Structures are given as C-alpha cells and as structure tokens.
Image 1 (cartoon, rainbow, N blue to C red):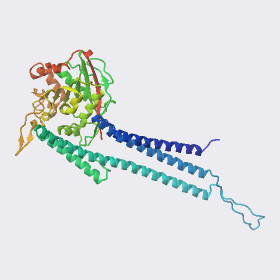
Image 2 (image 1 turned 60 degrees about the vertical axis):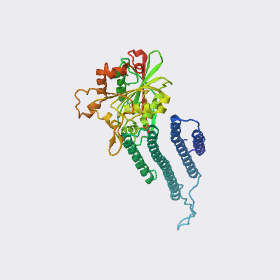
Image 3 (image 1 turned 30 degrees about the vertical axis):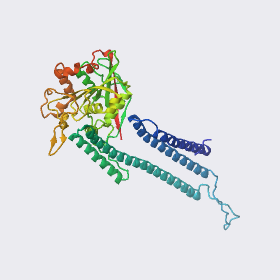
Image 4 (image 1 turned 180 degrees about the vertical axis):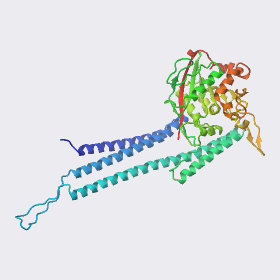
Length: 488
C-alpha cells in the first residue's frame, strides 16, 4: 500500500535535526568570532583574515537562520498532517419521517464534504500565510544584514581615505617633500567619491551603496604553472618567454595581459618567473596594465578605480593582490625580486617598491616600468629603477613631472623615483596624436629590443643586480601565473 502525505514521526525527527544544525552553525560563529578578533596575528595578512571572517560569520548566521526557518516549516507541515489524519468524520444527522415513509433514515454528511473543505482550506490558507511571513522575515533579515554591511563599508572607506590623506601629510612633515599635484587630485577625488558613497548609504539606511571609485579588498588565486620558451604549453596559457634580455622580460607582461578570462585567472593575472643560475632563485614579477575602464568597483582591480588609487600614492587593491600572489608563490626571504610593469602595472610595481612594509617582506632589487607615471613615487635609491617612455606617450607624463602646488601655480620638483629615465624612439607609424600606438605595450617591447644593446639600456641590462634575472637557458627557468581580483 502506498503512502500519500507525510510520515509524521519522520517529519518530527527531521525538524529536530534541522534545529540542531541551526544551533551548531550559530554556535560555530559565536565561538570563533571572539577568538579571531583577539588573535595575536598582526600585519596585512591578519587584518585581511579578520576582514574575511566577518563575511564568513555572516554566512554562518544566515545558514543558521535558514535551517531554523526550515525546521519551523517542517513542524507546521507535521501539525497539518496530524490534523488531517486525526480521523474526524462528518457529523451525522437524525432523519425526519417523511409523508408516506415508513421510518427515519440517517443522512450523514460525507467525510471531506463542505465543512471538511472549509477547515482544510482554512489550514491551507494559514500555512501559506505562515510561509509568506517567513519568506518576508527572511528577506528583511537579509536586507538588514546587507544594509549594516553597506553602512560599515561606506563609513570605513571614508576613514581609510582620511588616513591616506593624513599619510601624505605625515610624509611631508618627515621628509620635507610635499605631495604632488597628481597625488592631491587623485586622493581628493577618492575622498569625494567615498563621501558620496557614505551619503547615499546613510540616506537609504544602508539599502544602497554606489561603490563609486571603491577599491574594495584584494584577493589572489593559487599559482598556475605555465610553460617557458618553446616548451610545451601548460594549463592552456601562453608560454613565458625565456628572460634572455630586457625585451624578453617585458614579454612576461605581454603574456600576463592575455591570462585574464581563464578558470584560474578570471579577472587579471601576474606572472612570476623564477630564474635559478645555481646560486638560488631570483624572481621576476610581471604586472600588466589597465584592462577595464569603469568608475564602479568591479572584480578586476586593474581598472579605472585602481588607476586612481595608484595615482594617489597609496597601495591600491591591485598592489595588495600582487603581494598576496607573491606570498602564495612561495618567494623565499632574501631572494632577489624584479618588479616589471606596463602603465598601471608599472605604477603598481613602483608603489610596491616604495613601500617599506613590502620591502620588509621581499628583497626588491630592480624595478622596470614602461608607459607609467612614477615621477612622484618615492622609490629608495637602493632599488635599481628603469623608467621607459616613448616621446609622444602622454601616460608617463600624467604626474606632471612630480610638480607640486605652489602660489601662484605649479612648482617644479625633481623626480622622487630615482629612476633612470630613457626616452625611446617613437614606434614606427605612430604619430604624435596616436595615443594608443605610442602607449602600446608591444610597441614598447619592440623599441627596447631594437635599442638595448647600447646606451642606458645596455648599462641597466648588464648591471650585476639585473644579471641575476637574465638567462638563455630554459632549464634555469620556471614560471607561474596567479589570478588577482577585488571584492567589495
């Protein structure tokens, strides 16, 4: 005999198990949150972990609430099933003697008749009402949680922008060098956007957060092995050129430009290449430039938002994601590191080299940028820095030569990067008005290939620090690509 409906004993057992699971998730969040909050883990990794845990904790509590609601729903269905199965029959009525009749007859109401339909409809309606209310409360809980997160995020961004502005002032006091015009404009724009985001979030009680110019938080994926030189390709990625010259090193940036969109690198990526010539590995980190243009925070940190953050003189989310990727790639303490980047990638490289905290983690010996405005970036003289530009590329000149504000106009200031600046011959076919042609990363690589055998390029290539990264032996080279991204 088949059973239609619910086995109420099993239903009650299911409700108990759902309730037990709900309590377990809530207890897990409650037990771990205070431990994580006071854990003696200092530094950017610890702060990132605690920030991530807030989202994990909210997910645990949301799961707990969903399980509790499911338990309540099962209990309600058990109650309805028990009511329907209680055996309540229709009410019988004593018959009335009819003319010509011989007696009385009972005329019972059939079970499930009018009164049964009415009560069943009532319970069904009540159950639907309860489900609707439960769904509504769940929706409100989700919205309330998101609203609180939006308000906290928007307020934190304003505080962060103010701290960054204070950092520029502190550098002025401690070094005597005022912030550049570019840093002030970029930082002021970021602070204005953060104020707009906070205003919108506050006025809508957290229901809306525009995320205008919101650089979010960094993420980095696990390193994916890639082929080297003419060897077989790995994981579907283009091979990294053997770093036998400066132009070939720049080829690693070109390869990184093409890595976005793969499963392991969905947004953007950096290539990390190890060169071991018998004295321990040296690492080349190649960083591509802007690949998206937008003013709202997205998952790709190499975008307009990242450009503005980099120009303000602070560590952008892209810079922090590159740091995470380098740690995950296992770069050991003391190993020489060369940072190479085009456009925004060069700004990222320069900002990292200028950051004392980053240099405390990695032994940065060399930086090479091309098409990047880095005159205002305070890179120590101990880092061999090469800045390449085409004569009509406007991008490396966007920092106005490190100009400072002063009455009545701008005040010239020497470059802070300490870089050897090399102006290459313009790319063939690119006139003064060809913005894209003069800024193209492939054109830069071709210009370097044609000119690195002499002059300042040859001197940089042959310097002892650079030679640690130069080899023509593919057996001395291994390479990976790591995805970098942004979360709101």
